[in-house]
Amino acid sequence: MISFLIRAAIFLGSAAVGLLVASLILSGFSAPTSGFIVAVVIFAIAQSVLAPFIAIVAKRHAPAFLGGIGLVSTFVALLVASLFSNLSISGVSTWILGTVVVWLVTAVATLVLPLLFVRKKVQEKKAQ
Image (cartoon, rainbow, N blue to C red; front, side, top):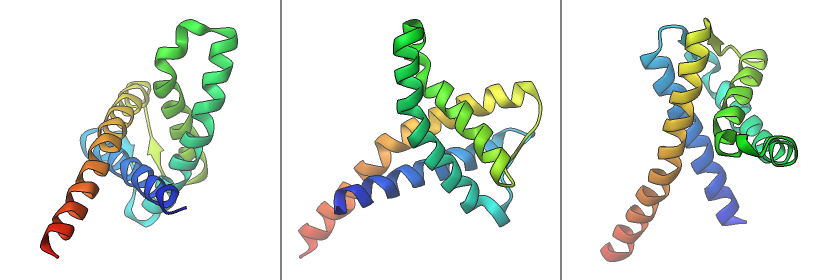
């Protein structure tokens, strides 16, 4: 149960970092502070639910798309988050770049955040 909560926290953290970076570097990508947490939670839930579903559909009907499942599920999760929160993405190029940026940043953050967490725990153990 604890490992599930840690994974969920890391996933939410990586989603927050991804949306934050995209909103900072893309002018048509806006995640206002007032609804940022709601947008992060909706995006993270949509991403975690949609990724396996899209992978199954692609495997059955379009195996060539399996490599792009992360990008497709990120795009759909951004679409869902923009519909149900105050996340705003305007323009086709911003949708494309936003999808790539959020996908890339969340992927890197998902790898880096656990390492930081483990490093902190190791340092705490050494200090005892």
